[in-house]
Image (tube, rainbow, N blue to C red; front, side):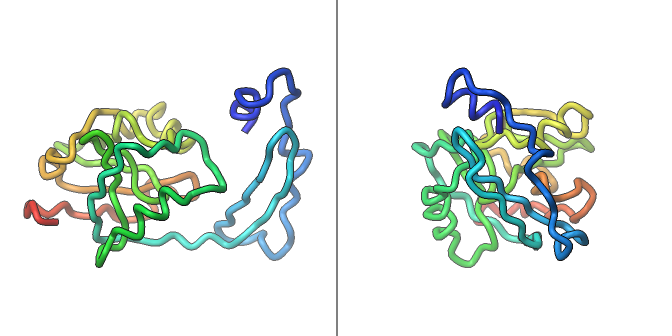
Length: 176
């Protein structure tokens, strides 16, 4: 948050979120999403129970013009892509023929016992950075046509544990 604030508003003091976030009693159990809306200052802090969707089917959608390098309240471009999923549970966003992310999570692909994550995701998530640092995933350029070279797909974000959900088997059928 402070990195983004400093990029947009020069010469401002960092905010320590520990001074602002007080988790209400009704959100003390389970996985809780805390949303901090900010500009120069904190504008709003909300909490909601987090329900991880466990998508099993994906549709590739091309989005060469999309940019989402910072979290934003405006997800209209992502929403438009997500609405193109037809019968699939989720989407895999392809930009300039390279795999980036799903609708709301980063991706990892299994090949020969190693997990690889797209080298250029739309959003370089904090949990993704942690997994890279720990050596659990390795950044790699993955073209759309190379997906069938991998055996499994896993989605993850800051609100999910790496081991929390089973990976999805990748079909060798090029139609899926």
